[in-house]
Image (cartoon, one colour):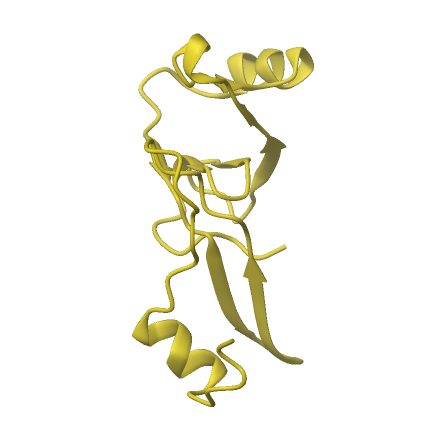
Length: 118
């Protein structure tokens, strides 16, 4: 599992992969929890399992920062080579098809071979 790009502090919720990451202050550690997204009828609330809610409540200090992002593509250079994770982006509000965005960073990471990008 690759971690989302960005600051590794507090709570980070990556909507594209439906995961909540908690980075405890002063530790080189991450806790990962699955999340769900409600329907429009439930105001698109983020859902968690009861046991996870209890754990978060008992272990996270009031005032901990929370960032919500949508990183559908995660990349990393590891000791054994390049790693990439692809997740489906959220469906736009108008119901149109969601597409992965091939940024320059992604193209540089995987190469610019037209066949690879299809």
